[in-house]
Length: 263
Image (cartoon, rainbow, N blue to C red):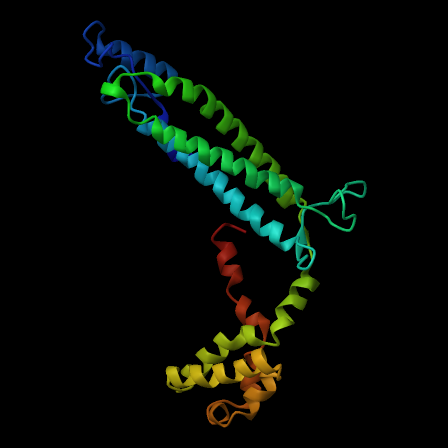
């Protein structure tokens, strides 16, 4: 947003065709300085609209990021998932026909507004090409898309911040869902450990895969089958195999990621 603001913060007082034919360049410099903006290096009757298009597409990218986050929460709030959800007040209604539902109405609103801003960004791109670089067909468009998009994004940022601040998280359900595969999610750790202990990767992959398929297709216990696999047993002990099934191994570098953001 800061970069886009700098790109669009330019001014133009250079005459009807941008040649300063009837005005001294000093006037442009003086006025722009007073407004704390930069004089455009070159202009015609209008400022080049690629600047405004960059600003608008930046708004669309930010809105799309909010859309991405909101879509994830919408999935996590599905009745059969319910790992996290928007705050739901005691008097709030969910579905109009299914009283058990707790609908993510605010996140749905975020996704809808993102579509509006992306559509406005397309209109801004259409404004870049002007006849002879001097028609004002962009003006009618920008009177709508600039205020509408900036106001909408401001609302989205404020509203979604509130969603995150009040987000309800269910770690027990997350752990329950992690266990749905019967430990198959740990297959990458097991594969890498086998390779680290000297197994050829292609062979190790097949060893892990054949035991994983027994779980997928026949419901057999993944961990028990791994321990009984002679090829794997020749490389790893039962204790080493069990260590690969510790979810904390997958999370051991999470603090490093958060530290990048000063958290």
